[in-house]
Length: 170
Image 1 (cartoon, one colour):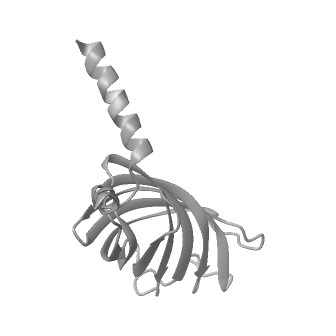
Image 2 (image 1 turned 30 degrees about the vertical axis):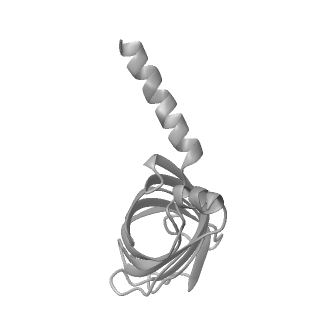
Image 3 (image 1 turned 180 degrees about the vertical axis):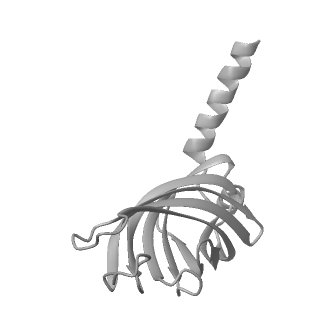
């Protein structure tokens, strides 16, 4: 009996990973983590999105812009999924923590992993972003991490597969 439940669970999860992606084409909203910023997400392929995030440095003292490609994998449906990806970032610093001047602009590579839930036109996501600074002259901490919660409004919904099927018939 346990073996049947285990096999059913594996088949269910694998089917979910291969069929489902995400339920919208474009979303825009707020990103709240170390900083308050915005996030714009655009679907570019079936399971792939491009995410542009930016913050103005209101709380932590540095401005931040990130561009990442994300691959979405459905857990139960395409409305609830997890994502993995990577990209790059540019960060503008003020004064470093040890009162030594920091470079005016830092850039590097970043990875991303997280989960997303979309209900109607509201999308809520949680992400974790490890970042590596690629500047040779920067003597501070090169490997950092950021996590945030994003609340986005879906600007352009994706048609459901059921609607597409019935549109072809009628």
